[in-house]
Length: 247
Image 1 (cartoon, helix red, strand yellow):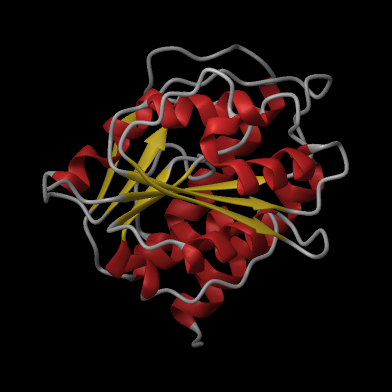
Image 2 (cartoon, helix red, strand yellow; image 1 turned 180 degrees about the vertical axis):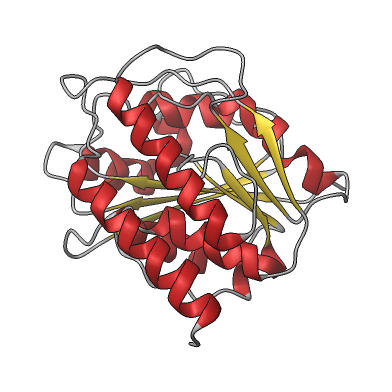
């Protein structure tokens, strides 16, 4: 019997893509539980999830559930950030493997099978999906790419890993690895925090290529320069201070 995979999906103002991404995740054939966390959306996403909470995935027009064990909908009482939503989703998940999926359409859920494969095969404990060794990606913001590469380099220098895409959404974990980590970040700083703590965990880490269909700010992209500053802080805090100077 295949291990159940928990797909943790943080949501904030993604009503335009929310039902479609859920349909796409459900359509991929592996035993799964969906753990969807709404971070106090104001655009109708919360209402969509409340309806699905009542109706189940039959409320998704055209959805054909495959190997679906459970659907969990968690509603944050106030907007607390992506990191806080992911942390709550991790706590509520029960699968042997846990992976993060964004609620937009930038990441293709068909790639989930590639990302979790090294864990399923018993050769990895953590897997990062890399947008920069993948096959298909949308060409967009140059300075975003520069910032991403710079943050990944700094993260690698302090974590001891040689990742190509530290900021990727697709991170998969064996449950035992995930529960051994105490996470603190509430916003986008969760990405370098995870990389730093994985680097200290003495576990087997793999990267696999994934497709990436990035969106513009006009299409709903949310990450900005302030998040880059917070990522630098998180690299310093978890990669340098905690690694070399204590808890």
